[in-house]
Image (cartoon, rainbow, N blue to C red; front, side):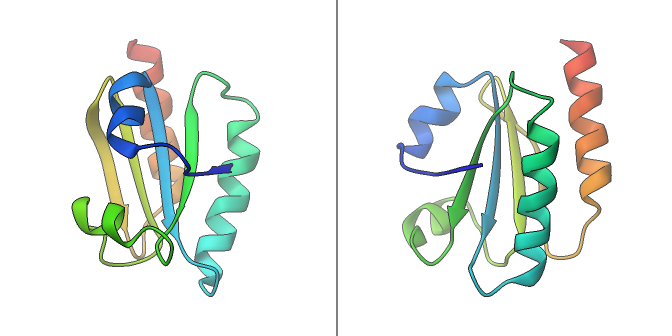
Length: 104
């Protein structure tokens, strides 16, 4: 998963499906989630994904009410459809995304 280098607002508006993972280097669960997302993304080239380091992107985090890591946000057609922080089931999030993809 590539790191965020673009303007997030532009990326949200211009990308049909955007998955964001907010994390930090010292967060073990963040690394595990990123690994699993990288593997999942290999089968989903229709989805754009970015990793947002919360230490490097404080303004982006504050604008999006990110208070803890890990956090996963998914936008579809500019609308947030998933936002989970802290302890959550990544499998449940991926299942929801799969469901939305089938509805498209």
